[in-house]
Amino acid sequence: MYTAKQFLILLSCTLLVSCTTVPTVEEAAVLDVATTAVGLASGAVELNPFGPVGGSLLKLVYISGLVKRTPQGDRFVSSLWTGSAVNNVAITFMLPPLLSIVTGITVGYYVYTVQKPPSE
Picture 1: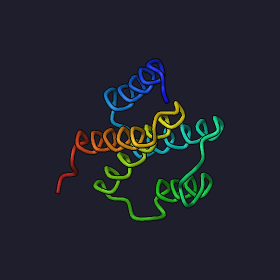
Picture 2 (picture 1 turned 180 degrees about the horizontal axis):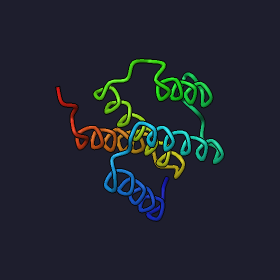
Picture 3 (picture 1 turned 60 degrees about the vertical axis):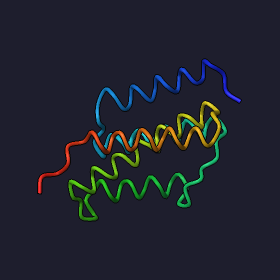
């Protein structure tokens, strides 16, 4: 189970990530890769079917512009990777899996909704 201290640390990280700024795609990628590395170093298991290296390579492909980037796509990808980073933090602090997933989804949704939608 988790302690009150772990929960407060997770809450602080979540608030820091989601309330201080809305990350760009590049910042969200760094957050996700960094928190994945910390989680793996702490004994967590990577569930991404591409693995940590494959996931990082996919991020590089997207960021480099080898695929067509759109404002709406960037908005979605930024929220997805930010939510994944928060999920990684929750897993690192050994929170229950369901709470970790719900926290990641909540922050990802928040990031998606506070970003200015692309003008069409």
